Picture 1 (cartoon, rainbow, N blue to C red):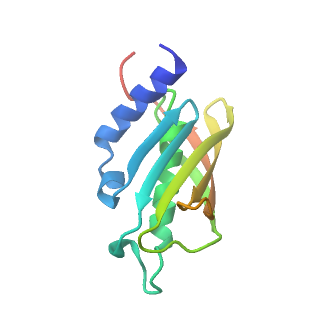
Picture 2: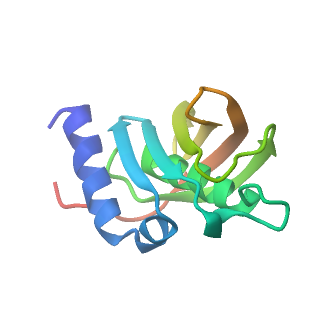
Length: 141
């Protein structure tokens, strides 16, 4: 199985059970070994009391992209910790794209950067996630 095939099959297995990302309204984009994209169109129910997209919604989008990137090798992997910086607001109607990319993978620990841009390419947030591999696989090889 090629790395691209493994990443696609891992993503399909995860997406089938990822009720949280689906409930929020995310869609899964391209997935490769150590990379993933997720998208979300900001709707009224995603907005906070300031009339902008709630930071927790943006964080959820980035975290989901991170999850698909770090699970792309069919090794069950979870977030160990992460941090996010919000650099611009997102508004109702914006299409947000979270692109996750592996920076480092050593043993069971990984580091991933996730950039969240709007439809115009403007950066809304930047997240760094640290992962930890655990027992198990997403599908049987």
